[in-house]
Figure (cartoon, rainbow, N blue to C red):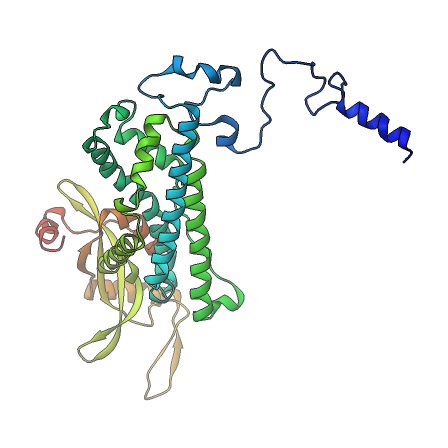
Length: 373
């Protein structure tokens, strides 16, 4: 390029009156007000919090907008957001460490249980945040800063947190190919769980602040103090408790499984039924011994004669009717409320239909409800 052309281009791009001076088109030599902001796609960077004024020309007038919701200077608010985000980042590291220390990949080898525990472990992140809100309000009041709470409430912030954490069932997909082998499947599950955890904490860090007032930020920063249940030891204790509750609920046993019996191992069937009670219905688990040769297409015979017989559709129907009459399901326990959805989905997956209502008179289950809560 000739030197003359280069100088011409330089003059063109440096001229304040050139129509090609910027992406925004022609610009004046001076501004009576700041130019509009360029959008980056990051909601907090583009809009700030609910208390950041949208028009930069008014930034110097922030003192005229003080109320119980917005009372920080812009620089003070940025520091508050920064501290909150650092604490969420630290909480993410603590949670991932807790998953490793709890040996989740080794303890959840049952694929059916994995799909539900995946959701429960992700839900625990938002649950821990909501649980910490109570401590945050108390700590702020105890140190004499209760005035900062006038613009918010525990319900308000709980709603904000729920708006950015995952909702609905996110059942982990079934691993394919080499991941079908046990060790690979365990590692694959832990990898998927780790990615989901990182996404959840990123949402809490980045997507929540733009919805907050100054009063909300004060509470969130305090809620994510490490002393409010966000150390790796605290998270591991929560994870251990969750796994123990799920195992004791026996929801993971729905289907046909081998179990130890008085005379050796035997198979049993576990199903979920809706049980009518005086105050409404509840989901409960029932079990009985499993019998082969009930499904059409199965081979039936004796070990002595070697004779085999393929069960027909009519034989299957007749045998099921007889078996249901002679070996009815026995009550095991009621399903805890927070595991009902998982139990319904697992029953549907294992038995091909949703749970039906038990035929027993509701009044007969009231005593059992007290005996097996």
